[in-house]
Image (cartoon, rainbow, N blue to C red; front, side, top):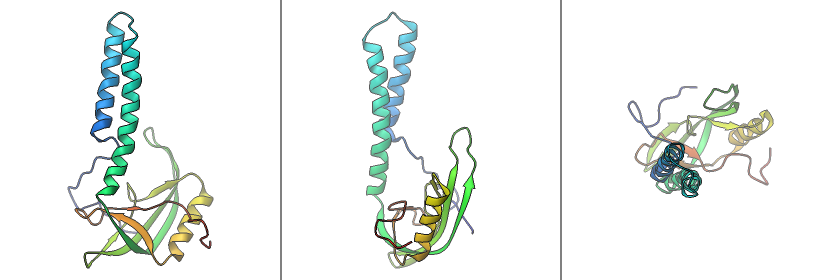
Length: 166
């Protein structure tokens, strides 16, 4: 199945943290540096805990705001594959579902492989096969599509909807 980078050559999109998350990371680093270099104070551990909470919140809010800018469309699955991916030091392994879907945005036809990296990662082979089967059978797969880069898409939900026939 062919796969191209989202938005074409040279398109770079940072995932995950957002500006609030970066503020949280700076708070944690500052708290650790000052705590290690100065006398014990009850303020610095709270700065670290607050930084961790801010970084986690920033990551969640960034995902929500990212999808808010995207448009919802319905796609049709043209091809789907399931593979086991081994883990790396920075990413856990699991069962990847990679689908090639077709949809129209503003009257223009597009093909893409939805997911942050062109695939979605599921915990078990059974759930990956069930999701792939759902994609094969569904006539209208709901997607979030980035209007600025129409080949960049995300599944609206991952998994088999309740009540769907497998």
